[in-house]
Length: 516
Image (cartoon, rainbow, N blue to C red; front, side, top):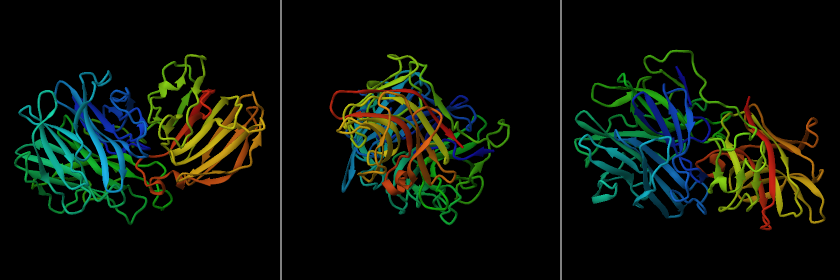
């Protein structure tokens, strides 16, 4: 059996392919750099993170993108020779108008460098690439305003040619997005997400005799949704993709979330789960478990043996002895290699201060996503500030407007102090009176999340042994999709800012995150 979710903590909108006996999943990253997370598995249950495809600014410029803008719903595909990735860069997502630009990159080596992007269109988002059996390629994306599905052919240079045609208006459940087309047997099958990416999320399936439609919605639609009456079940289930095994079995990967303590908020954001599927007698894919609700476990593929597997390495430790930063790191909007370095002081990470954490441009934050409900993050830091506009420390954040920051700074009178800041929808408050601490010595910082995941406390040590609590107990609700009205998840990370423009630096001896 496979335990869901298979990708834990902020891994939404999965796109899956099989190449031989290897499976690959790509997921959304939104405003986080590098763009698109990529994972590999040989059995659909053990997953290893690979280098991201979009790791050059010439491929993706997220600077200034809004919170939960940026890279939406990538689609990974393979035509027997090349790997392709299509993705959206969302520049605005408020009010009536969404500015969404869709691109394509490709490579022959999924572990190597990917091409420069080919611009596709800006009519909607969630593009996918369909490779038909005759070698033709088609761009499939939802129409602006989530009003249906568009199809357009691509030429040999992967550029759109010919007419765009709306082939499906949706099933009537609303917010039609995330389309994928498959040619199986005599039918062209289409799946879309509908109902919005919240607790009414679901997966709709349709089919037609031509890629150009008209597509007929499956009877007893949707084929997947969530049991909203059971908050212990996977919620927000939708945005799916299909894959077959070499043994002819079928699986669906899909977005999901796990609410905490029966409440409708999720600190781990939107994750990826998997369900085994079967074909019914009328030629529609259905959950093998029956019904429409996602299951917490699903059958492993034939030939895969072993006990129920708790997927995902929840622990992370980095002593910065490797001059290349770990593949699991992310930074907001900009390449972390522009401000973070493990070579200049061997065994340490040196980070150069830029703008403050609430900036949408150049922020020096290096973090890993939260993957366990209950966990601790810790670091040891050396930082010698001269001005109140300089700060470094440990952050627990969702986005530029919602975070906690335990940081070392200076008062205007020159006293080195420890502060605890809270930002709730952009309103920043001091949670403690500044605590005087030694100016030049190393300080250790820790954030500890409670067993139920709904509370956090912050601790520090100035000599490495005795830990003191900074402030009280704080809610994690401000780091959830529901509170932030976002699409991402919580991060733990190392941080420094220098708003004087003098680029003061902080050195970090180690960084660890341990699930409990």
